[in-house]
Image (cartoon, rainbow, N blue to C red; front, side):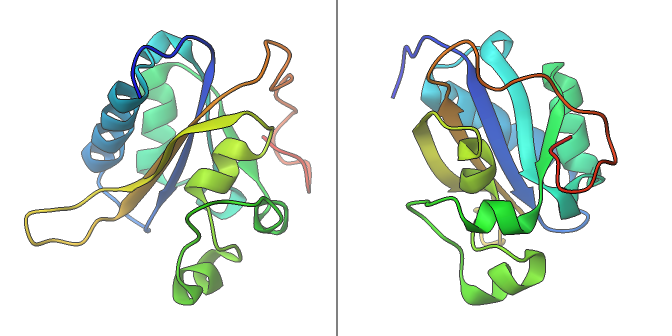
Length: 151
């Protein structure tokens, strides 16, 4: 899909220690596919367990947007078209990180889950992009550290 106007949320999942350049590269690739300029991104979203993952933090910083995190239990309730395998779900408590985090506040999935990798190596990063339905979503970022709230 190209030429999409609007505001976007980038959902990102990553294995522990995923290289920063791999995370940022996949995010940029997905944004190009969505036709979404970096300036139209309002947040990078992920599961709370990945809040300190350097590559995900760096992706939000590179885009100049907040990192929103959600408890795994909340993401597990978000219907997604491309859930992960049971082993991946067991690792973080949800069958989807990238798509579910992107969709957590609503909107339209414009780039479904993409995985990094290629050239004979497994990918360590997943990414999905959602176009928000209106300018009122998502709301203000609540303070960090409040249990059960996105940050």
